[in-house]
Image (cartoon, rainbow, N blue to C red):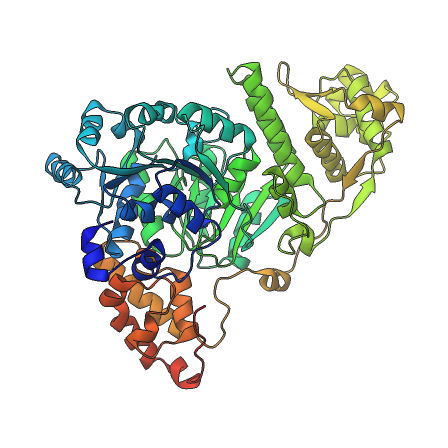
Length: 623
């Protein structure tokens, strides 16, 4: 255990560290069991949702065990914030990466060699150098924590080749515990992590993947930019959020669109200069009401706790990717929204990208199955949270009541006859054409192209007039999602029949489609549905004063505001309204060091506030 902390703060157990340093009264879920397991010197593979407290599972053991905890993190741009957060708590932490000058790196190396650190953050590329391996051999190491460990998986959504080489730790340091941590990994990915990193003897800890504070919503693309703008304007005004797009061009145009409508939206993708990407990331982390529009290159390891929404303008590649990306919302446990729109073109594009890749057939098969699971999630009429948790091996007993399909139940209809018409039309036209052409044929629209091929003479011409264009698009979208038809990427993207259609065409199997919602919500409805973090009417002024003080302190130190105190801590201050530093110590997230540094300043605001005069008897105690 860190001797200075032991002497100065009389820490005697992991729970005492939790309370004294981190300012939390109790461990959550499996944290205590995991921490005891690692302190005993054992390996572990930890699957815990974003915001579930994974970091404590290696931070506390690193402070208890003799030596320095080595944290392997994939993004050097985030290390500074992680280290700043630890230093705010009085924990001796540092990082080694290419951003340091030679003199700064030498100082950190000296701290490592002389056991003057509790935690050292390092990128996998740096760890694998001969120089760093030499330093590790000369140092006292308490543990190795491999963050975002799913990056080792070639089947995963964030594959990093250098992660595979981390198996060297097993060979070079067999007696030092290794901890793999991730928020997402299905059974296939978990097994690959174990095999590649030699974690065969590691104990597997799987927490619930449920994030009950996130509201999941999926809609159909109509006018996606306008849909996004309406969502932000009516439900997320002044909130921080992330918008994911598939292409760099779409990232740029969407960011420009939001800026034109009065929002601070910053693009982030691999085509930007590194300095620009870093600048935009820093602004997002340190400022409020910033929207990042990004490709999936952005977000891994983002620790910003007050992201109130994550929006997808394009379909992700898998449920794991979707879960990982949406998990960046609501890390503080407050209300947040995962909002997505998608359409037929998304399905076609994703299938085409898989088929056109240079990967082997096994890889393509696995990726397609993952995509199929995501399509099933999008098209479900059941509780979305149940579908997602079932994918990760959980069996939630009841619908969640906090997703769109629970709040507005989806109707289904018997589409067997309609499906047979669509399949017959595909077959009789030669399995060469896409949705637009087929819909014209079904509706009897004899355009020039259709006449040229003579398809106005086919028996399927005009047999689908009972549905509209949008309804037929929904049918084709759901047929693709169910793998009853697929996209032929060897030609011009035409639809082809799969084996699944045989029973349907013979009349041996029924097909049920979900009804797409009709109509447009009014502004009043949207306002009513808005999900916001603040729900204590009458105390908005106090909330603004607390945030203003936090921002001032953070700006003076050049750190993100949430590193001082996150929103959940400020909110508890406003609710509990402590009258003294002793009572301030009871607020979740206010540890000994932060109490000494900032307690009196925030207490002064609370005591001077009008809210204190209005509610003198309101003082619930922390559990």
